Length: 251
Image (cartoon, rainbow, N blue to C red; front, side):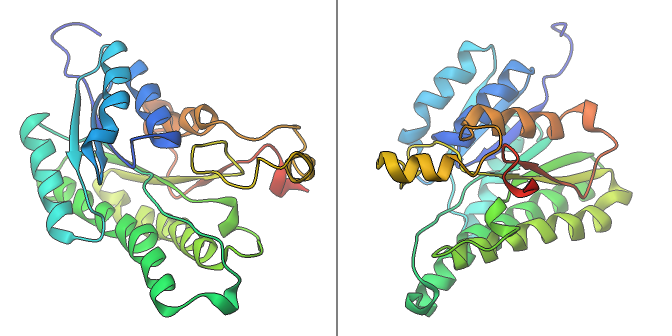
């Protein structure tokens, strides 16, 4: 990339660790500047340092996906500091395990508000910005294989992730005339700091046996898929949910 060329800009939510942090690093290697968003900006510093090591500019921004004012302020801040936004990566989300009969209305709304409504409202904010400015854009959201098949004790999470998958198709059709591509990935079990249930060797081996490729996913596996869908090589792909699960759902 020559010095005269503008570096593309990606906004990544939930960028402090795991898939979000790995995605920021992958996009920085691909020549992007990054707007790194999370509830606590102090948690973003390690990711920002990695982005800068790869030659990218990194801005850290506090974002609460439950707050429309926070979403609007984030878009405004990024467009003012980095001049534009080319790619949105909807990665932020929460999860917990409970039997469906134990899930309260408060539990249900908490997961939906962040994972589903937050992803939609963040996408809507960027869609509105791109359509108003005539700027093409790309959205890549993180769904889950939990949204594709039934999993015990993960009903609310799986319902929200299934919603993200269908949201991807709906927005892709609606915004295609504006040159806005909308895709998602559906990760299988991925080793991240918040991934539970892997400390017991017997349970870990039993779970791993379900994966034809014989291993769990790594954040970098997901980041590479996101970077592909965000980039020019995926320019004719929209409305697609790319399953990245080591063959789990092929069985």
